[in-house]
Image (cartoon, rainbow, N blue to C red; front, side, top):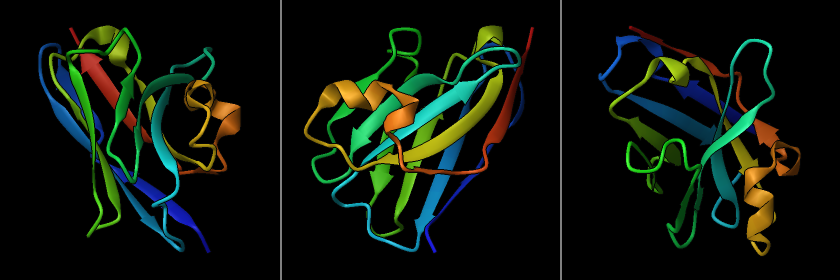
Length: 127
């Protein structure tokens, strides 16, 4: 059974930092793209960052570029999202997903291209 389990969310003041983790189990994701998305109340799920598991090449939404860093630890089968200089508008539930379509980078930005999802972790940034 494939599972993605996010953790690390919480309440932080604007300007602060959090590190989210996504622990994967049940299959190898070495041929996948792993992505972080977020969803605020009343809004659609939006792309945050992605990483090609095998090469480590990363992709970011413009809104988080320079503030967030996605990485993976193959030995732990875990993907991370380091979030610095957090803003109130970063408040959302953050989800980790797995996308098997590594050949078309346009797919990395679309939630419907991801086969697997975690349950999400809440990030709240206060002013």
